[in-house]
Image 1 (spheres, rainbow, N blue to C red):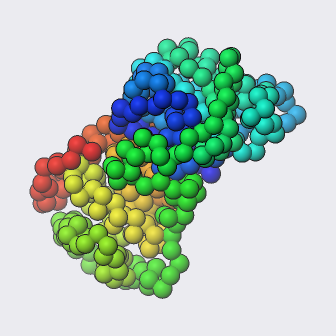
Image 2 (image 1 turned 135 degrees about the vertical axis):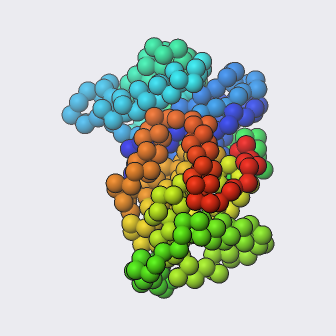
Image 3 (image 1 turned 45 degrees about the vertical axis):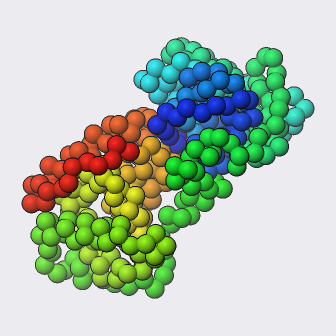
Length: 374
């Protein structure tokens, strides 16, 4: 499991959250999956019961110090995570936030009101670090799971209790679903969707890679135009049409080899600013799953870059993990990894995407102007 936080700098959205249970229930929609054993920080503007502007949502796997140490200490890993959360809040001038600890492995009953010193230590450390950077932590809530009817309790006085609302009926969930965002059961389910395939097609692609590398490579202009043509074809086909089935092993290998050329790859960065961005992500995902290592590192990185640009830090993190597993030294993936660690906002990624225009033009390809603010 990754050690960096799933910083999800979502475009601020106005949502009416009338109770703590409603806010907790909205977390799966904001992340794209239901987290387990996690520390989450939700950056807010407003108060529960009013119209809340929900901004950055940060998540990290939960860990505790060695059992031999005092229960009131915080693990080194979580201390680093809290400092990173606080740094993002300072940079973005976050005034208020709420923390949620999700831990189905807790030893005490949430409903009983008996707090575990480990959670208290975590909440206190987070409150102190945020306060030092100008962010007020309204409360820290503990729950075993984010599921309808699951008990939650606050870790600060007065100790409020309640139950989680139905995540499926949350107004925030509705807003995200209407916006085309899907929700999965867990982060692992998302990672499973992007795992490399071992099929007849992927084995054929592996066999074709060597031939594609040995042949005279087409010009960078030709490679860019062929990839753009395929994306355009996918964009024109019906949504229920299995577009990827029409790509032959030879074509997949050709695209994989073409994307190892930096000029071709960097031209593709500009696509995150276009209406074809979602279609391009589908192609990058298919190439990531069917290409062998190290060739899959580039399309996986492009997928992560595109997800990052639209504010989906979770998808970006999973794709970057896939890229670095295929090639640990892949420079663009490492840069994105560092940006995600630092909680860099999507605006910065979209600024980088603008460089793709200049690269494409150097290759003799004139891309159409940006058509999507994303």
